[in-house]
Image (cartoon, rainbow, N blue to C red; front, side):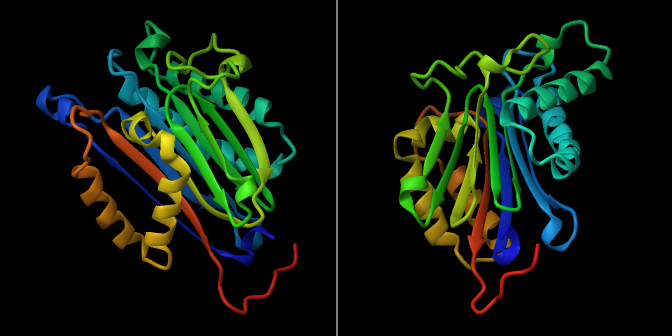
Length: 255
């Protein structure tokens, strides 16, 4: 049962040096939270990276996070919805949200979109464009990593939200969240440099931050992101992490 365990979530976004130097806003955005009460909660999380060449991409990335929060209520009521249908539902909500800006071109708001929903025993994952979604489990055979540019022909580096995108532009999936230890979503300011060792990276974060208060996780993450060791990576950097920390002796709650 999903809420048998203690779930901890946190996220942070640090503006890139190139945007500071050019007096530009952070074009990344994120959201992570719960919706609902007791064992009927749904956890939702998203990260988005506005395309640097587009003038309103920071608004586009923030809009993605707003619609994922809105969609969490829909998913809670319709948890049998397929990942493909959820991707298209989010895309439609985002398009409607952008219409409020009376856009001349939707492409001015271009952003990537990575989001997950966890409800009861199910984890739904969707990704469009750059970035990384990675999960580790007690059973290592269930570990997974979604990223752009895989050989299966789904999401790629040029993909971004817009009304003309099809499901073939998305990478989607779902898996039982039983025994899930940690889940990480990050934009390419981080994923580009860690994707070859992403599972080890997530495992090291889980080991480092297990039983650590979210505020202390954020403080430490602020430090190592600000001291990012890869020279030339001046991009915005955003990461969201969800961890499962079992409570000793806690009994399974009834559904």
